[in-house]
Image (cartoon, rainbow, N blue to C red; front, side, top):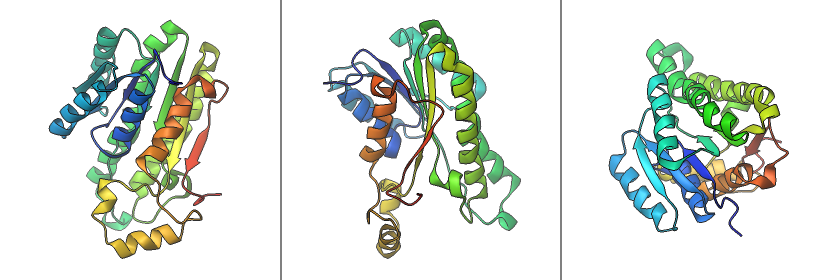
Length: 248
């Protein structure tokens, strides 16, 4: 059974890593997929071609979710191309790590804009088609760092904690219109970015996790699949940790 047959989903920041995994799983389950990328143009084009092999409509858009006007124009373009939007996954994000005493105002502002303001921009814009359809599922990618904090990531933790509060507020505002809003908080997920780290450091992280392994993009994508599908029709306003037991 394809859980997302007939649905249209948009995934931000999907050219690599977790976003790419989400887009692929959605397409495999029958969703038409619109996705965004910013700098990875070639990877975005490759993903569009890959998704269409699943027999669904797919289209990539070069767009900055952190730009209010660009996010509004993106949603209008997706509705024009696909007819509606049933699912929004806010995945785009960046890090600018450093101890607070050395962190510049620019490093703080960049992370808040890319990680938190982007969620406001996209949800604000996607309300229109979802309110018109009287249904929708919004999934915002937070982090365990937004739940417990992390030294050297004050800006990132603040942005990801803000996403959780924003998600819960949107759930309260839009629940009566059958629009659901949930957040997910991934822990240590192994992607291309972690592959470049010292193997000994990575193994130390794995050993500190109760399940003794890092998560995969598919682990995160499968949770998003559940929240995007009608199987989660009575779930809203939640932040679900996907961390192998790091947070209990």
